[in-house]
Image (cartoon, rainbow, N blue to C red; front, side, top):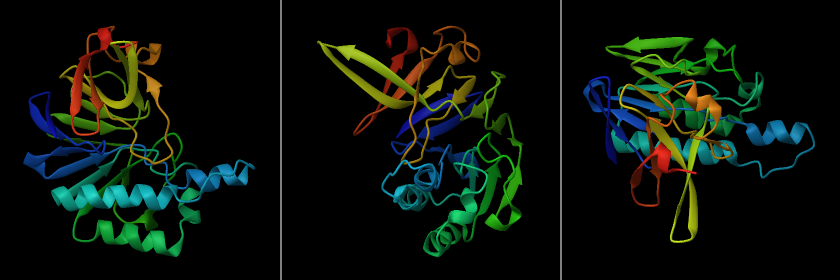
Length: 221
């Protein structure tokens, strides 16, 4: 775990890609993309159909680690508009168990803009808690925690390169890594990040095997 400071709030960045705000007992995850495997299968691209189970398993582990009072899922929790209907009964039971005895907020994303109320918890376009605003697509305002871009960073050292998911933050706004098992990533040198941060004026917190590595965006390639 690494402590990140955002707009006066201290957050724990977990190696899973989740973020925990201890003062609020609040856990944040982004871009689960549940049922991405089944979505691809419908288009003839056959992937092992275990991504939802794997993602829920990782989510269950991080929930057990922190026992949050509130979970905020920052959008694109489901890979398409009908993905929630394709959840197996077993995976619905797992999700229900994760939601038990805690509050849950689903933020609508571009992949899942019309989430049904039957998922459990509340559905919102965004939510503000204290000095922090949670939404799916980043706008660059101060105090914002967003997802959508699936940030990853690439660094080279001693002739070797490493590319990892990362938290991207300048201390005033933060973009979460994607949490889902089948999610890809967008390099932080992409122009989409220049619309959110002062060009290269932020830090990539790369998710390593045992710890996070804080590297200035200007040093990434």
